[in-house]
Length: 119
Image (cartoon, rainbow, N blue to C red; front, side, top):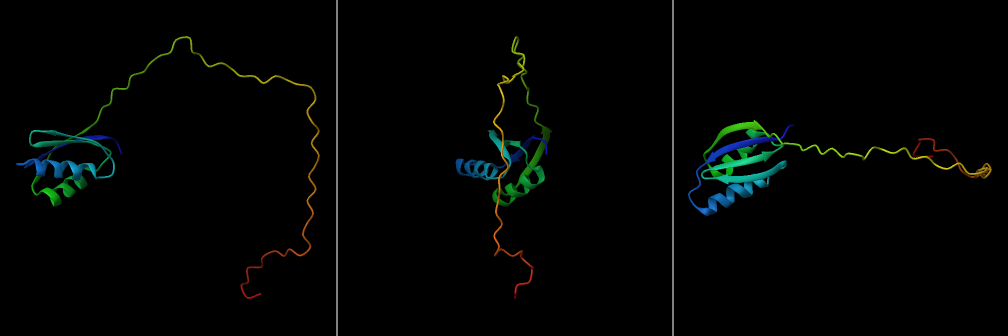
């Protein structure tokens, strides 16, 4: 999913309800940030807006989903001048060590599993 900016209108009369709304919104998986604007709560994150509204309605009562928009992050592209990738080469040394084959002795008492549990 894409990060979304959701604005929801709540009825929050006292600080306890504001704290409860913030705690509920932050507890949802995928929420990046939550902010309060008067009687509105602004949630930014990778969350389904309908699910978040449903969860807030269970906890808070009446909740209106005012708007849902894609969160546009301004990505700053910094260009580094003079920092071009440099090719790395390994020096060639003289003759390499000769590799000998490894001899493994088989265990004469080892049997392949047959798949039968009883035997």
